[in-house]
Length: 233
Image 1 (cartoon, helix red, strand yellow):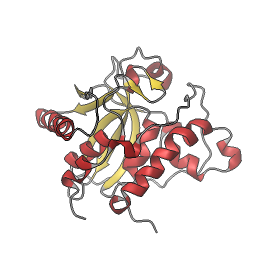
Image 2: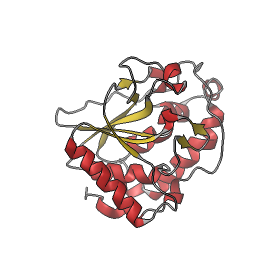
Image 3: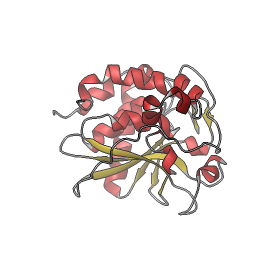
Image 4: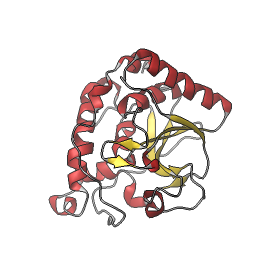
């Protein structure tokens, strides 16, 4: 697969916009019995990147479907403690951001590609907010593990700003990766489980949020980036 390069820089941010508002429910969500995707074996030479762009349910699915991405994990990062629950993070006081950790093949898709996609599929101009979700846990953030990753993150932010894809000032922050925690199991592959769930199972899920916020975003993404997605079958 050819590298994506600057293709994504030219993507209109409005393609994956947030037009409909629906509040996501709180921390009383129940485990799901919907179809769980098969476990993916992650090669030893896989690379990782941790990003925060609002609700992790919303962006996890997008990156999961890109060619070159092995799997995506929902989690929390950047907080005061190495231990935190969804309730702690949702309070907005733990310092953590809802994040996704992307495991990818750098020979197929680069960190630059992933960061560029990230900067075009969420709104990097709204401080501590994505659509109806507000609070520091929903901040736009690129986490880095070394100076090279920090430099690349700033490079992509500057490129997106120069392209003027977004009319307002970009507020995405760069933070050293610390206190990363894998989110509770019921958060993992949430929208994938929703798509494969029965009507009865969906009734126990955050159906309103999935339909109003995540589903339109995913449909637009799949249509726009069809040639960059994993082949099914």
